Amino acid sequence: MPISFVSTSPTASTAVDDRAMLSDNYDTFLVLLTAQLQNQDPLSPMDSNEFTQQLVQYSQVEQQIRTNDQLETLVDQYRASSTGAALSFLGQDVIIEADETYLAGGAANWAYELPETASSLTLNVRDASGRIVYTANDAARGGGEHLFTWDGATTNGGTASDGVYTLEVIARDSANEELETTTRVRETILGVDFSGDVPIVITPAGNRDFDAIRSVLDNG
Image (cartoon, rainbow, N blue to C red; front, side, top):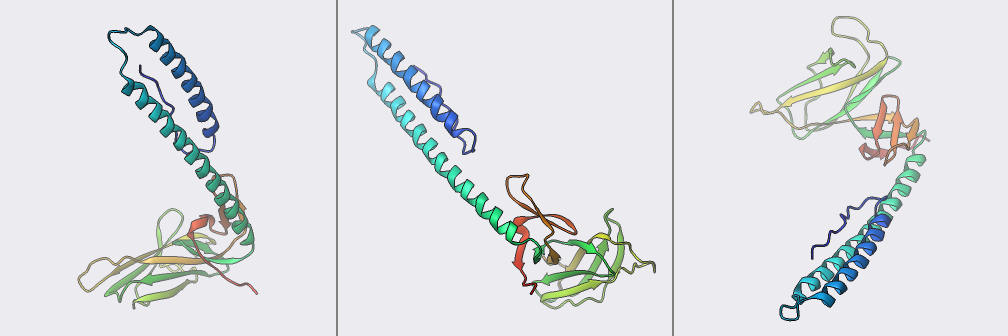
């Protein structure tokens, strides 16, 4: 006697519906089981293992729904915690793991980190269209973190307009293997977007994922 079961994925909108459908299915199962027991052939009785296994399946599904309920509670608590934390960052300067920042007032600042001393190092500044507007080959290439400030001067002798620019770090070791680098920027949190599942902070360079923030600085 096949009985269909409800899929139980941990989403905030399905747990109540899943529990109600499970209850309806269970009632239907008992009705069908009772009818089948009343009308079974006495010479070939129904195998008790079959409906016992189905009862066990119902128990497992119910336990999964209860687990989903608990997960939803944890998700709600995380969202509330993230919302409060994001609001507390308004107006604060933060360090964000990102390779793009905003050029304003003739200055754009990045920090790049090398895992070891690089044999060769090239820093390319790209505009919003991806075009290289400035290249530096004389930046610090020792292991550790280094600051890089760009004044907006372009390679062709011009001056870049204010806007968002991306720093590309190309570092190679003595074996000419590319090194894995990390780039960070310092920006001010101007706002918080709560329209999605998790808060997104707004900076002069655009929207940033909340989990990209590495540290919060004291503006005092």
